[in-house]
Structure formats: structure tokens, C-alpha cells
Length: 144
Image (cartoon, rainbow, N blue to C red; front, side, top):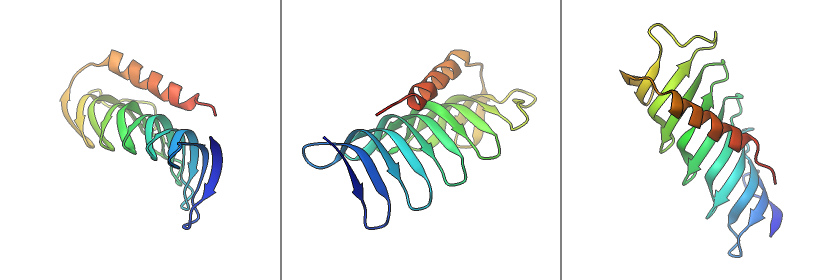
């Protein structure tokens, strides 16, 4: 079933609901700070492909698990810097590539294994980057 609900704090959900009254399936969640999520929900949380646009216009497009960035995707900061790769539990974790706002990747190239904002080791990972870009595209193309 589909419907809209306005929460007490001013946030709003519009989308599909489970029989138990939880967000389930495709939906759009608008937060009071101006942030917005659109994508899939399971048991009330962001789960599967989705897009989170923050109030500063930074955005994440990709896979979610238990309400957090998890899996493969692309995070773009409002200043144009981006990370394409793997995320775990809401943080950069795994293989990926950093692109700076000028379009460069740094010298030497910032591609490899990351933990948070720190590169642990350099490693070429073109197939993983391609998969992250496909995950972001899938999330962007979701429709109700």
C-alpha cells in the first residue's frame, strides 16, 4: 500500500508501506534539515539501492544496508570531490578511487584500498569502480 506520513519533527515519508505500518519498498524521505533520500526501504530503514542528497548538496548514490551506506556506490562532496568504490556501515571502506574537484586523481593516483578517509595501499581496481558506477546509476534510475 502507498501513502504519505508527516512525522512530529516535520520530516515526511511518501511511498510504500508494509502491512505492519513500516516503510517498505520504494519511498521518498524528506528530512527537516533539507536532506532527502529516495530509494528502497526494508523494515523502516534504507535498504538496497538509493540516493541520499544532503542539505549542502553532497550526495551518495548506491547501495544501503540497515539505513547506512553499505556496498558499492559513489559519494560526491558539494565541492566536486568524489569517491567511487566500497562502503561499510556508513563509511568509506574497501577498494575505490578518489577524484578531486579539478577532475584529477592525484599523483600518484589515489586508487586502492581505503579505510575511512585514508588510503591504506595503492591497488588498481577498475572493475570495482565500474561496479560502483553501475550501482549509482541503478539507484539514480529508481522510480516509484
